[in-house]
Length: 329
Image (cartoon, rainbow, N blue to C red):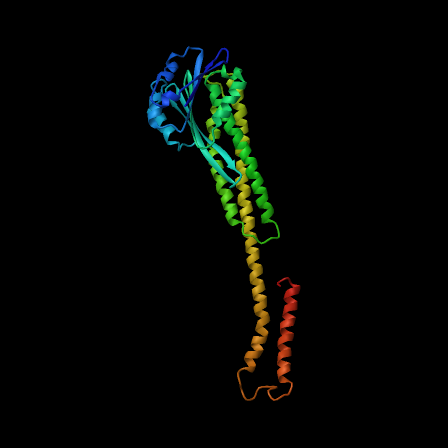
């Protein structure tokens, strides 16, 4: 657990060593109860347990349901109001190039009058980059806890856009394979990428209505924040449109591949049928002369046997030429 106290007037920071609090000591957290009106604290926690959150609840107002949501980390993107505390759940997302998988995590952001609490679950930690951006822009820190929400969501939405570019690259490669002359079954790869896009969509799409209220003037934070949230929401909307397009395009790619597989199967059936017809000619001739009737034509003719073989070869050769000319072989 990390804690930074920001001076809203100057943007200066004060780091608090909260490591002892995680080990049982609470002296380091008592500074949270002594915040001046012009200060706010940003507390960052990584996959905390319920006991640790309840200990923190002695110094910041956390509703029991908020603690439950923060511990379970299975929330859809949403925002909830618990008295003076606003809770926002956001899915983190990143693309693993080695496996071409989209991995997701979660960040719960709690905003109070004098604090911001972020609870992270998953391998990706957007709060590190968000803290760096706030450190480089002290004027943002002067805007209060809402600046933390903006910084964290801005980093997450930027990660969405980067992942969308990588998914688009994989999809382009799949398209090349689908429309190439090579006969390769890509159904599993297409379904795998489509599953990743669905997971991507489930992270991005529900976040759009969550972020839209922040683009309007609110009574609980400075109006200077509105343009910043509009920028984040605009980037999110573009990514959402991109993900929808990827999902639709993947459906079209899958249909095209299945149609191509159907064409392969038809080609195979035509070849099989053509060869069956070719071999049917000698089978019919041989079957007729194998009936052993006494009075069959050409049985006593000296050239009857070569003639029968010639008929077989001629009939098969003519069929082969016809099928070859029509593209069946």
